[in-house]
Length: 274
Image 1 (cartoon, rainbow, N blue to C red):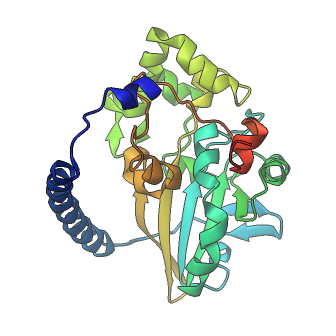
Image 2: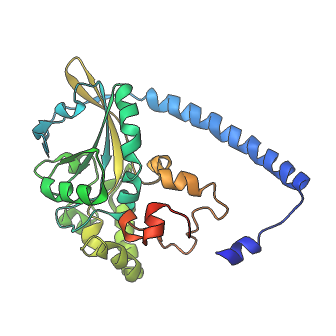
């Protein structure tokens, strides 16, 4: 890592300032484009949710409408934690590390935030305690919710390539491509899956994502869902790494981050080297 920094261009302050101003123009353009995309997102039509879903929560059985908890808007993070998993997905876990702090601010804006996974509730709550999280976590174990919102897939559909994810279907779906990739680079896939206690194909029968809902006149409406790079901006760690000298530093395709309690004490606590 140090060698990569040493090989980087070193210039005068004036040369750096010139390059930084050029980058600033690109950043401004990206900000304006993001504003336009946000406006388009808010103008998306809604779809009424007619199906009744039931979730297991620490507060008992709840419907999708119940998950609003008195608010008019609901944001759900689809956390990869299948019934067979022994631990939550490490990627989802790193994303979830950023949830605790912003939840009170969302609620102040009439927005409820919840995490939903297909693993049984007690499994989720045990892992949540280990991670030190306080967000609302619901289990969809006995519900079609994950399947209907394209974040869980059956073994049969996976085998037949009948997968619908990220607004693509069949053999062109990204999930099916990852099944094929596992045959080519099984070690990388198996290493990642092993951190959750399952094999690669079982691991990718779950997928991450986020969905938004609105409650109006006692009816629930689905307003938005995003998958894969579509919710990249919600990953707080990556937003900071994108501004670090070496960025995400994953050119070799490996995921070098871990669950926060799997680093050594100094890295886990954020403390400086003594």
